[in-house]
Image (cartoon, rainbow, N blue to C red; front, side):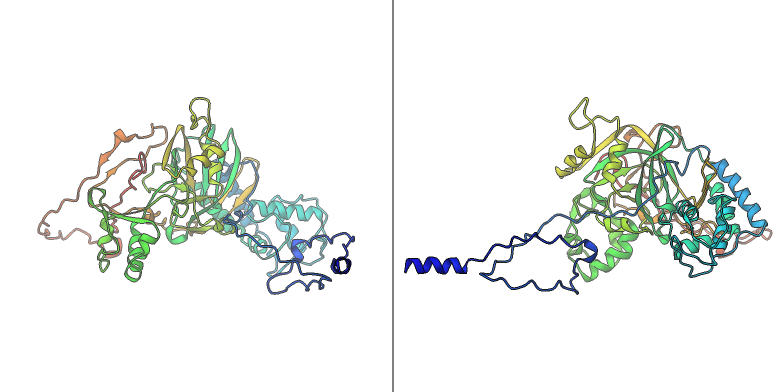
Length: 512
């Protein structure tokens, strides 16, 4: 019996397969959820239990849109004059008739032959992307592909060398429009007193990028998300003074009026679920679930979101005192960094890889371990991991400017263009009401206001705080009789009433 049992086991035991295991499929042909892989052949012996897949709590890797690696800064001391000269050059091109359009729907890849290649060659010769003595044919050859890549780089497009919809659209913008973009951008730079130095930061709003400039070159260019057209990011010249780890967020007035109040009427638990506290006089917390949300009294209270991973500012905030109360920061909505169109914020600038950017800003600032230590990405991550709010003051403030350059020229003679997302290049278009959305809720007790530093002045400290004057109610005097010779203003000529602006508490100094 024992012998028979042993023989049975021997028969039942599967014969090991000595054939080499097949190579894994490449990602491009892995079966999808809709198209499953063919079933595996049945096993000759006992079935093997399926492996248990452990769920991971790790977040997927963030994908960033590809940005130019050109070390030439968007803004440098020579940018203004170079842009003015380029505007004159494009004016001459426009007066000479400009370039022929590339037919809509044109699609080219290397090696293609197409009658549209002639118009493409003529355009790129006029703009200096292609040598004038290049071969003239209908073949989309290698020199022409390289010229298209140069054109795409100058227009902030993916440098693929493929001529498709976006590239054709950029090619067909008339020379007169390009000239206007250059002239309008140069005009916006007039009067600038930005203190260029060894290290400074440039945010070009139409490009939705942040440049860390060092010794005349771009040390690193970061993907950014800037204000949408109805919540425009303003032009600013100031200095970065602090890096805040685990910041809190004070909600803007417009968010309270347009989003929070309607939401709380339907869902009274919304603020608590999102870790947003409602603070009254003296910082006393108010129960938001029992508050009367039928009116708009909430704008008289401070609504502040606790620090944490889900905080709207993310885990890092870059402080830069300015009258618009805008700043740069992290975000939990990192998927927006992958898009080529990144105009989604409420006025502030969200920075991809912000921890690396913060480490660059903190170069020379004493690290967390005392003399001789530094603030690198690891130290910043460790500081965030504590969960505690921490304000790190830069040993030397770094100049920063937000500019709106849809057309600009670099000293090497290249003209760069971006879409006029805010419509500021059209003559007579007023500048947008810059980021009124970031004005925070007014507390019942008047808050101190700090004036922003001007170029060349010392950065204000808490000693410079001036209490905001409380509103004074006065009886209206009787209106005097109008003088016959006085011209009356029509309603459209009257200056618009401005909502009183408050800076967020702790824009400079301790966080609330």
